[in-house]
Image 1 (cartoon, rainbow over the protein chains, first blue to last red):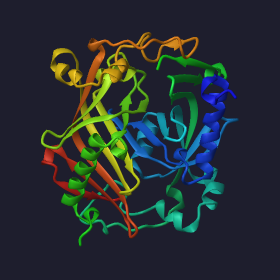
Image 2 (image 1 turned 120 degrees about the vertical axis):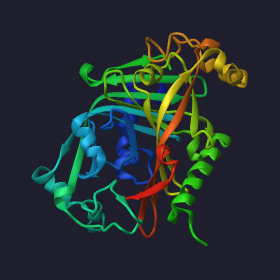
Image 3 (image 1 turned 180 degrees about the vertical axis):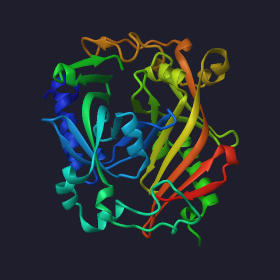
Image 4 (image 1 turned 45 degrees about the vertical axis):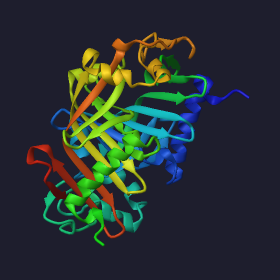
Length: 186
Length: 186
C-alpha cells in the first residue's frame, strides 16, 4: 500500500481529514492550532485557539474569539495570519496561511445560538482580555452576544512537513493553482 | 500548600522550570515551541522549532536553524518574534515575546562542535529549504558549518495563561520592569 505522505494528492487529503478530526474531536491535535498574527507593534504574536469549523469546499477554517481580545484588532490591521498544527501521531506539521475576516453580529447569530450556555461566558467578561488587574479574581465573566466574533480564515496556502523514517517530505498547496501541490526541499 | 499558579513569582519560576525541562528532555512540551515571525510579505508565519538553550540569568532562549531557511531572512528583517508553548500537564500556555538575533560563524563554533555528527546534515542541504523540487528525493543532505545559525532570542515579555478548575489566570512579566509580574484579565 502506498503511504499517504509519499504522494501530493494523498497528503492534501490527509490534511483535510486531520482538520475535520480537529473540529469533531476535542482531543485531536488539530483541535488546538497556534494562531500567529502580526501584533499592533509590528512584531509577531501567537496563541492557542480552538478550531470550530473546517470546510474543504470553501477552504475556510473558523475560530471563535471574544471580540475584545487583542488578536481581533491585530487581524483587522493585518489579516494575513498563519495557523500551525503539530500532529505527533502523523509526524506531520501543518502551516496554514490564510486571510482572516472578523464576522460579528447578525451574520453569526446562528453560530452564537449553537454555543453552549456555559461557553457563552467566554464572550463578554469585564474588564476586557489583557487588561491589568490587581488579582486574578478581579475579573467577572459576563455574556455579551455582541462580543462573539468568528475569525473566518480563507486559506491561501497549505504547507506540510512530514518527518519520515526514510526522509522528510515538505509540500505546498496553493489556492491560486486550485490546490495543486508541489514538493519543496525540506 | 499554595499552588504555583496562584502566585506571580511562583508562576515565573514554573515557566523557567518548564523551559529548562524542554532543553533537557526531548519529550517535554517546551522542547518544541512554535516560533512566530513576520514573513517577508508582511503576513504572519509560524513553525515548530527545537529549544536548545534557556538561560534565566540572561533571559535568552536559543534555537538552531539552517541559515538558508526562510525564517532567517524573516528575522533579519523583523527581529520581534514570539515563541509559543502549550503544556497540557500544566494546563499552561506560554507566550514568549523576544527580539531575536542570528549568530553564525566563529561566534557559534563551540556550539557547532557540540552538534552530533548525524544532526549536522540538517545544516547545508541542497537545494536550500523551501525550494520547489520535482520529487521528495531531489534533495541531498550536506554538512556546511557556514549554514549553522543560532537564533538567539532575548526575551522582552513572558505571558502565561493557566487554565484552572476554579478560573483562568493570565499574567505578564516584562524585562523592562525586572520581570515583576502583573495579572491580566484572561
